[in-house]
Length: 394
Image (cartoon, rainbow, N blue to C red; front, side, top):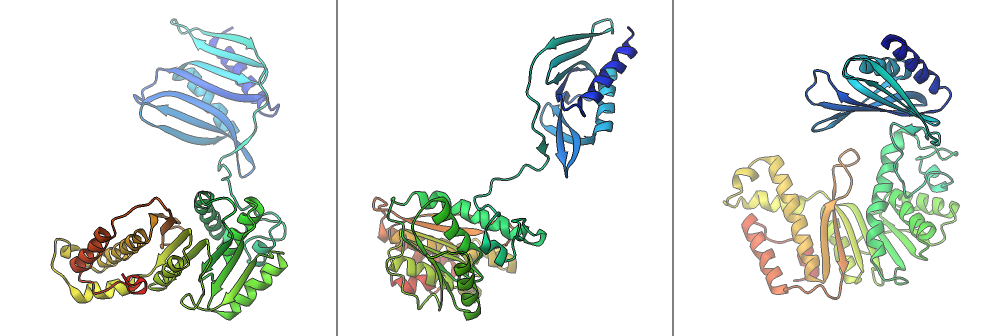
């Protein structure tokens, strides 16, 4: 049989394997083409928007490149590779392994080995991410216009749904560090429409099986009424929303205090409430940093960084870092092991810094050293006072 006849027969095997659902994968090796970087090509079946395709992974010396083609174009490309560039092709079906190889004289030979492989599971091109908050059967997600009655996430609510899940995923390991049975009271300061408050309660009670009460504190009465109505309709008996300001709320006995995007000094008010209530866990995502920025603009201290702070955008960023840095130091002063990391990517909100304070008995700090650092930082940037510093009176 001629080389051309062998290749035609092999192409037919490949084409027949797709509708028969026996195609598993293809490996192309011993590359002899002109691309100095290319080493191998691997092919598998995928689905993109319910359309079956062939995914090619081009294995180069320094990186992999993935390209997807229709079944017809993909099969044509495989035949071209075998005819011109690669000297060996291994095709795996559910029943056999077929090796097509060029020998040193250019003659194509075919070897077949009978095997048994289970039919491959069709993979989506965009692998579904693991979500801690599942959309199906969630009354509160329907009422908040994130999903429809069937649990499908609305297109215009995809970002909010991702935000909810990232928020819960970040809190999960922190919550698990707290002593079992001690986690009872959660307060979300400035809860707004309650997207994240509902999700956290759902996760605590229905996933982690923690018998906790969660309270959302919100100044706008219409949002409080709306959220309480949704909580009642969802049968969330341990979740409630109260009208009031952060400063007025009695934080005694709380285990976890949350304040996401509380504007300017409202974040300081929330941290203070957490410290005063001796919360085991304080989680804040600051928003706006006007109090410190105004003082830095007014002070205009000459130092090694003044060439940066004369530009508005750099001054804003510097004010954010200084404000949150002092907040972290004050939390350390009161016995909290503090972390600062990214909360949510810019695709969802630009306010992407999360400050976490975990109360620990063995977290020994030199308070005098911390106070000196805060003092020298304020002097360096021309800051008269930090709002949180005045609240805790250090």
